[in-house]
Image (cartoon, rainbow, N blue to C red):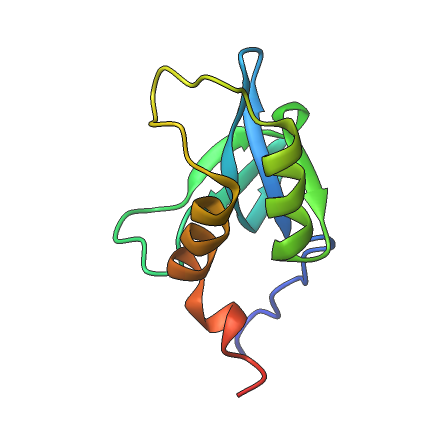
Length: 103
């Protein structure tokens, strides 16, 4: 019999480090203080592991995106400066099934 997968409480998150927030994603696994995050549902590589101290959890993707927009660094040396609407559109491209679930 297949092992039952444990449902993850508050599966959406923002992640970062001491420099600030880096992005948002979906938590797909936990082991001790390690949290596995999927950056996109079509991601072709394994989920990335983060220490839970650098994660803030949310019930919905919209909540995590809102938090990311409100708390992201104003200047990010790794990414271009996205507008709030571009970030919301990015969430729709990264997790399209989340937004299509009511259709």
